[in-house]
Image 1: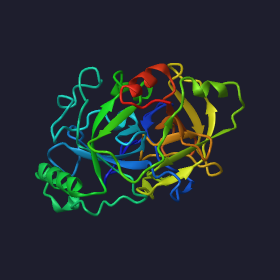
Image 2 (image 1 turned 90 degrees about the vertical axis):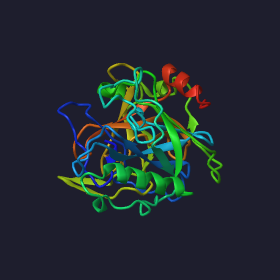
Image 3 (image 1 turned 30 degrees about the vertical axis):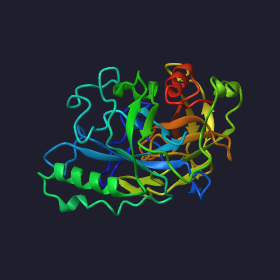
Length: 311
Protein backbone atom coordinates (compact mmCIF):
# COMPACT_ATOMS: atom_id res chain seq x y z
CA UNK A 1 0.00 0.00 0.00
CA UNK A 2 1.14 3.53 -0.54
CA UNK A 3 2.78 4.45 2.73
CA UNK A 4 1.43 7.03 5.14
CA UNK A 5 3.81 9.33 6.94
CA UNK A 6 3.97 8.42 10.64
CA UNK A 7 0.85 6.31 10.24
CA UNK A 8 0.63 2.57 9.57
CA UNK A 9 -1.39 2.05 6.40
CA UNK A 10 -4.24 -0.41 6.09
CA UNK A 11 -3.00 -3.87 5.26
CA UNK A 12 -4.50 -6.61 3.21
CA UNK A 13 -8.07 -7.69 2.47
CA UNK A 14 -9.06 -11.35 2.27
CA UNK A 15 -8.37 -11.56 -1.45
CA UNK A 16 -5.51 -12.89 -3.53
CA UNK A 17 -5.03 -9.40 -4.94
CA UNK A 18 -5.49 -7.01 -2.12
CA UNK A 19 -3.48 -3.96 -1.18
CA UNK A 20 -1.52 -1.62 -3.39
CA UNK A 21 2.18 -1.66 -2.52
CA UNK A 22 5.65 -1.12 -3.84
CA UNK A 23 8.76 -1.18 -1.75
CA UNK A 24 11.99 -3.15 -1.58
CA UNK A 25 12.53 -6.21 0.64
CA UNK A 26 15.79 -8.13 0.94
CA UNK A 27 17.36 -5.71 -1.50
CA UNK A 28 20.50 -3.61 -1.45
CA UNK A 29 21.19 0.13 -1.57
CA UNK A 30 20.69 1.49 -5.06
CA UNK A 31 24.16 3.10 -4.95
CA UNK A 32 23.33 5.64 -7.63
CA UNK A 33 22.20 3.13 -10.27
CA UNK A 34 18.78 4.73 -10.70
CA UNK A 35 19.09 8.50 -10.09
CA UNK A 36 15.92 8.98 -12.14
CA UNK A 37 13.81 7.07 -9.58
CA UNK A 38 12.34 9.36 -6.95
CA UNK A 39 10.09 9.37 -3.90
CA UNK A 40 6.67 11.01 -4.19
CA UNK A 41 4.98 12.77 -1.29
CA UNK A 42 1.34 13.78 -1.72
CA UNK A 43 -1.73 14.99 0.15
CA UNK A 44 -5.16 13.35 -0.16
CA UNK A 45 -7.82 15.63 1.41
CA UNK A 46 -10.38 12.83 1.73
CA UNK A 47 -8.11 10.39 3.55
CA UNK A 48 -8.65 10.13 7.32
CA UNK A 49 -5.86 10.66 9.82
CA UNK A 50 -6.88 9.51 13.34
CA UNK A 51 -4.64 12.14 14.92
CA UNK A 52 -6.85 14.93 13.56
CA UNK A 53 -10.54 15.82 13.60
CA UNK A 54 -10.54 16.90 9.96
CA UNK A 55 -9.66 14.50 7.11
CA UNK A 56 -6.48 14.85 5.10
CA UNK A 57 -3.60 12.39 4.91
CA UNK A 58 -0.07 12.39 3.49
CA UNK A 59 1.36 9.42 1.58
CA UNK A 60 4.53 8.37 -0.20
CA UNK A 61 5.07 6.42 -3.42
CA UNK A 62 7.89 5.95 -5.92
CA UNK A 63 8.08 7.11 -9.52
CA UNK A 64 10.34 7.12 -12.57
CA UNK A 65 11.42 10.21 -14.48
CA UNK A 66 10.64 9.35 -18.12
CA UNK A 67 11.20 12.83 -19.61
CA UNK A 68 12.57 15.95 -17.96
CA UNK A 69 9.06 16.86 -16.72
CA UNK A 70 7.06 13.59 -16.65
CA UNK A 71 7.08 10.95 -13.92
CA UNK A 72 5.54 7.50 -14.37
CA UNK A 73 3.97 6.00 -11.26
CA UNK A 74 0.93 3.99 -10.17
CA UNK A 75 -2.62 5.14 -10.76
CA UNK A 76 -3.48 4.79 -7.08
CA UNK A 77 -0.62 7.21 -6.31
CA UNK A 78 -2.21 9.91 -8.48
CA UNK A 79 -5.96 9.47 -7.93
CA UNK A 80 -7.61 11.83 -5.47
CA UNK A 81 -4.56 14.03 -4.89
CA UNK A 82 -5.63 17.42 -3.54
CA UNK A 83 -5.79 20.65 -5.51
CA UNK A 84 -4.30 23.35 -3.29
CA UNK A 85 -5.66 21.44 -0.32
CA UNK A 86 -9.16 20.90 -1.74
CA UNK A 87 -10.71 17.55 -2.65
CA UNK A 88 -10.77 16.47 -6.30
CA UNK A 89 -13.15 13.58 -5.56
CA UNK A 90 -16.19 15.35 -4.10
CA UNK A 91 -15.40 14.29 -0.56
CA UNK A 92 -14.36 10.79 -1.54
CA UNK A 93 -17.70 9.86 -3.13
CA UNK A 94 -16.09 9.54 -6.57
CA UNK A 95 -13.99 6.42 -7.12
CA UNK A 96 -13.10 6.58 -10.82
CA UNK A 97 -11.05 8.94 -12.94
CA UNK A 98 -13.85 9.40 -15.46
CA UNK A 99 -15.74 11.54 -12.93
CA UNK A 100 -13.06 13.12 -10.74
CA UNK A 101 -9.90 12.58 -8.72
CA UNK A 102 -7.75 14.07 -11.51
CA UNK A 103 -5.51 17.11 -11.69
CA UNK A 104 -4.44 17.55 -8.09
CA UNK A 105 -1.25 19.55 -7.54
CA UNK A 106 -0.54 18.57 -3.92
CA UNK A 107 2.20 16.18 -5.02
CA UNK A 108 5.98 16.55 -4.88
CA UNK A 109 8.94 14.33 -5.77
CA UNK A 110 12.55 14.12 -4.58
CA UNK A 111 15.26 12.29 -6.51
CA UNK A 112 17.65 12.17 -3.56
CA UNK A 113 18.81 8.73 -2.42
CA UNK A 114 17.54 9.71 1.04
CA UNK A 115 14.91 12.44 0.67
CA UNK A 116 14.88 15.16 3.29
CA UNK A 117 11.71 15.00 5.39
CA UNK A 118 13.19 17.02 8.23
CA UNK A 119 11.90 20.21 6.59
CA UNK A 120 8.35 19.14 7.58
CA UNK A 121 7.15 20.28 11.02
CA UNK A 122 6.24 17.17 13.09
CA UNK A 123 2.55 16.26 13.04
CA UNK A 124 2.71 16.02 16.83
CA UNK A 125 3.19 19.77 16.95
CA UNK A 126 -0.35 20.40 15.67
CA UNK A 127 -3.55 20.14 17.72
CA UNK A 128 -6.38 17.81 16.69
CA UNK A 129 -8.21 20.70 14.99
CA UNK A 130 -5.13 21.93 13.11
CA UNK A 131 -4.91 19.55 10.15
CA UNK A 132 -5.44 22.48 7.74
CA UNK A 133 -2.55 24.29 9.42
CA UNK A 134 -0.36 21.21 9.01
CA UNK A 135 -1.19 21.08 5.29
CA UNK A 136 -0.26 24.74 4.87
CA UNK A 137 3.01 24.34 6.78
CA UNK A 138 4.06 21.25 4.83
CA UNK A 139 3.07 22.76 1.50
CA UNK A 140 5.10 25.90 2.23
CA UNK A 141 8.15 23.88 3.28
CA UNK A 142 8.02 21.67 0.18
CA UNK A 143 7.50 24.61 -2.18
CA UNK A 144 10.48 26.41 -0.63
CA UNK A 145 12.78 23.40 -1.03
CA UNK A 146 15.01 23.04 -4.11
CA UNK A 147 15.04 19.27 -3.57
CA UNK A 148 11.29 18.72 -3.89
CA UNK A 149 9.62 19.25 -7.29
CA UNK A 150 5.88 19.97 -7.40
CA UNK A 151 3.64 18.50 -10.09
CA UNK A 152 0.12 17.68 -11.24
CA UNK A 153 -1.26 14.15 -10.89
CA UNK A 154 -3.17 12.33 -13.63
CA UNK A 155 -4.30 8.68 -13.28
CA UNK A 156 -5.15 6.45 -16.25
CA UNK A 157 -8.50 7.68 -17.69
CA UNK A 158 -10.09 4.30 -16.88
CA UNK A 159 -8.69 4.11 -13.36
CA UNK A 160 -11.19 2.85 -10.78
CA UNK A 161 -10.17 3.02 -7.12
CA UNK A 162 -12.34 -0.01 -6.35
CA UNK A 163 -10.38 -2.13 -8.86
CA UNK A 164 -7.10 -0.24 -8.91
CA UNK A 165 -5.02 -3.08 -10.41
CA UNK A 166 -6.92 -3.02 -13.73
CA UNK A 167 -5.62 0.41 -14.85
CA UNK A 168 -2.96 1.18 -12.27
CA UNK A 169 -0.86 3.72 -14.18
CA UNK A 170 -0.44 7.42 -13.48
CA UNK A 171 1.64 10.40 -14.55
CA UNK A 172 2.93 13.35 -12.56
CA UNK A 173 3.61 16.40 -14.73
CA UNK A 174 6.26 18.57 -13.08
CA UNK A 175 6.09 22.34 -13.19
CA UNK A 176 9.69 22.67 -14.40
CA UNK A 177 12.31 20.34 -15.92
CA UNK A 178 14.48 18.38 -13.49
CA UNK A 179 18.12 19.40 -13.86
CA UNK A 180 21.15 17.17 -13.42
CA UNK A 181 19.60 13.85 -14.49
CA UNK A 182 20.76 12.78 -17.95
CA UNK A 183 19.65 9.11 -18.07
CA UNK A 184 15.93 8.45 -17.62
CA UNK A 185 13.54 5.54 -17.74
CA UNK A 186 12.57 4.14 -21.14
CA UNK A 187 9.09 2.79 -21.80
CA UNK A 188 8.94 -0.80 -23.07
CA UNK A 189 7.32 -1.14 -26.52
CA UNK A 190 3.79 -2.49 -26.85
CA UNK A 191 3.49 -6.20 -26.02
CA UNK A 192 7.06 -6.41 -24.75
CA UNK A 193 6.31 -8.83 -21.90
CA UNK A 194 4.47 -11.32 -24.12
CA UNK A 195 7.83 -12.84 -25.10
CA UNK A 196 8.04 -14.33 -21.61
CA UNK A 197 4.59 -15.94 -21.61
CA UNK A 198 5.89 -19.44 -22.37
CA UNK A 199 9.12 -19.29 -20.41
CA UNK A 200 9.59 -21.08 -17.13
CA UNK A 201 9.39 -18.87 -14.07
CA UNK A 202 12.98 -17.70 -14.07
CA UNK A 203 13.08 -14.35 -15.81
CA UNK A 204 14.72 -11.78 -13.55
CA UNK A 205 13.36 -8.25 -13.29
CA UNK A 206 14.74 -5.35 -11.29
CA UNK A 207 12.73 -3.21 -8.87
CA UNK A 208 13.66 0.15 -7.37
CA UNK A 209 11.85 2.07 -4.66
CA UNK A 210 11.84 3.76 -1.27
CA UNK A 211 9.57 1.60 0.83
CA UNK A 212 9.67 -0.78 3.75
CA UNK A 213 12.41 -3.38 3.93
CA UNK A 214 10.67 -5.69 6.37
CA UNK A 215 7.28 -6.23 8.04
CA UNK A 216 7.03 -8.36 11.19
CA UNK A 217 3.59 -8.39 12.72
CA UNK A 218 2.70 -4.76 13.32
CA UNK A 219 6.31 -3.60 13.16
CA UNK A 220 7.72 -1.99 10.03
CA UNK A 221 11.41 -1.52 9.27
CA UNK A 222 13.34 0.71 6.90
CA UNK A 223 11.92 2.94 4.22
CA UNK A 224 12.55 6.34 2.63
CA UNK A 225 15.87 5.34 1.09
CA UNK A 226 16.27 4.23 -2.52
CA UNK A 227 16.98 0.51 -2.76
CA UNK A 228 16.83 -2.14 -5.47
CA UNK A 229 16.08 -5.87 -5.70
CA UNK A 230 15.77 -8.55 -8.37
CA UNK A 231 12.34 -10.23 -8.17
CA UNK A 232 11.62 -13.12 -10.51
CA UNK A 233 8.72 -12.97 -12.96
CA UNK A 234 6.45 -15.90 -12.10
CA UNK A 235 3.27 -15.40 -14.13
CA UNK A 236 1.78 -13.18 -16.83
CA UNK A 237 -1.69 -14.63 -16.28
CA UNK A 238 -4.12 -12.06 -14.94
CA UNK A 239 -7.81 -11.37 -14.60
CA UNK A 240 -8.71 -9.30 -16.55
CA UNK A 241 -6.11 -10.56 -19.06
CA UNK A 242 -3.02 -8.51 -19.86
CA UNK A 243 -3.28 -6.16 -16.89
CA UNK A 244 -0.76 -7.29 -14.27
CA UNK A 245 1.95 -9.87 -13.64
CA UNK A 246 3.15 -11.71 -10.55
CA UNK A 247 6.66 -11.76 -9.07
CA UNK A 248 8.39 -13.69 -6.34
CA UNK A 249 9.04 -11.92 -3.04
CA UNK A 250 11.53 -13.76 -0.84
CA UNK A 251 14.91 -13.48 0.83
CA UNK A 252 16.75 -15.18 -2.02
CA UNK A 253 15.73 -12.81 -4.82
CA UNK A 254 14.35 -9.79 -3.02
CA UNK A 255 11.08 -8.19 -3.93
CA UNK A 256 8.57 -5.51 -3.03
CA UNK A 257 6.49 -4.71 0.05
CA UNK A 258 4.21 -2.10 1.60
CA UNK A 259 5.43 1.43 1.14
CA UNK A 260 6.20 3.00 -2.19
CA UNK A 261 3.83 1.92 -4.93
CA UNK A 262 4.51 3.12 -8.45
CA UNK A 263 8.22 2.32 -8.46
CA UNK A 264 9.63 0.97 -11.72
CA UNK A 265 9.98 -2.68 -12.69
CA UNK A 266 12.76 -2.99 -15.22
CA UNK A 267 13.19 -5.82 -17.73
CA UNK A 268 16.42 -7.50 -16.61
CA UNK A 269 18.98 -6.03 -14.26
CA UNK A 270 21.14 -3.09 -15.38
CA UNK A 271 18.32 -1.94 -17.67
CA UNK A 272 16.30 1.26 -17.83
CA UNK A 273 13.45 -0.34 -19.84
CA UNK A 274 10.30 -0.03 -17.69
CA UNK A 275 7.84 -2.91 -18.22
CA UNK A 276 5.61 -2.17 -15.24
CA UNK A 277 5.07 -0.34 -11.98
CA UNK A 278 4.81 -1.81 -8.49
CA UNK A 279 1.12 -2.31 -7.81
CA UNK A 280 0.03 -4.78 -5.11
CA UNK A 281 0.98 -7.41 -2.52
CA UNK A 282 -0.56 -10.79 -1.79
CA UNK A 283 0.29 -11.08 1.90
CA UNK A 284 0.46 -8.82 4.93
CA UNK A 285 4.18 -9.44 5.55
CA UNK A 286 5.44 -9.44 1.94
CA UNK A 287 6.89 -12.95 2.00
CA UNK A 288 5.06 -14.63 -0.87
CA UNK A 289 4.45 -12.63 -4.00
CA UNK A 290 3.77 -9.18 -5.37
CA UNK A 291 2.21 -7.79 -8.51
CA UNK A 292 3.32 -5.34 -11.13
CA UNK A 293 0.99 -3.43 -13.43
CA UNK A 294 1.89 -3.78 -17.13
CA UNK A 295 2.63 -0.56 -19.04
CA UNK A 296 3.24 -2.30 -22.37
CA UNK A 297 -0.44 -2.71 -23.25
CA UNK A 298 -2.11 -0.55 -25.97
CA UNK A 299 -4.34 1.47 -23.61
CA UNK A 300 -1.40 2.34 -21.36
CA UNK A 301 0.83 3.18 -24.28
CA UNK A 302 -1.81 5.54 -25.67
CA UNK A 303 -2.32 7.17 -22.26
CA UNK A 304 1.41 7.72 -21.76
CA UNK A 305 1.95 8.93 -25.32
CA UNK A 306 -0.37 11.81 -24.51
CA UNK A 307 2.33 13.01 -22.09
CA UNK A 308 5.20 12.46 -24.50
CA UNK A 309 6.22 9.16 -22.90
CA UNK A 310 6.94 6.74 -25.72
CA UNK A 311 9.18 3.69 -26.31
